[in-house]
Length: 181
Image (tube, rainbow, N blue to C red; front, side, top):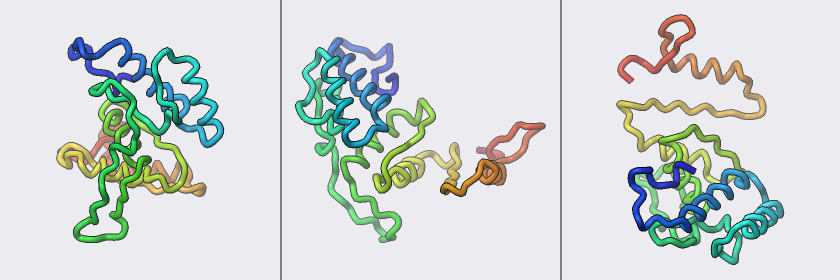
C-alpha cells in the first residue's frame, strides 16, 4: 500500500479520502486477489465492489488501475505503448507491450525500490522479461544482476550454490557483493 500512496510529507489537498480508498481497493485487489484465476477473479471482483462505497468500473476491476492524478479508474490498455523493434534485433529481446506487461512493469516500478517482490502468474505473461528489463535499468555501479533459472528439478542446494558462486565471503557466515559494489 505504501508503494502507491504519496509520501506523508507530500500529501496535498488534491489527494482526497476518495483517492485513499480507491488506492486501498487497488492494493486489496492485487495484494489479496492477484493470484486468483478466471472464475475466482470474477467472484473477488464482485466482493470488492460490494465492500466499496466508491464508484468502481462496471467491468472487471483487474483490467483497471486507479490514477491519483486523474482521480479515476483507467483501463490498463490506455498505458500500452506501440511495439518498437529492438535494435540490434535479437529474438530474445522482443517485448510486445500488452496490458499484462504494463501492469507487471507498473507494479515493479512502484514496489521494487521499497519491498522484496515475488512474481507469480500464468505462463507467458512476461514476468521474467519485465524483471530483466527493470534490472537492466538499475545503476550497474551500485547493483549486480544474478539470474537463476529454476524448474521443478531445482533444489535449494542448487540455488545456494549459484548465489555463493556470485558473492564474496566476508567473515564467518557473512557474504556480500564483490568488492566495490
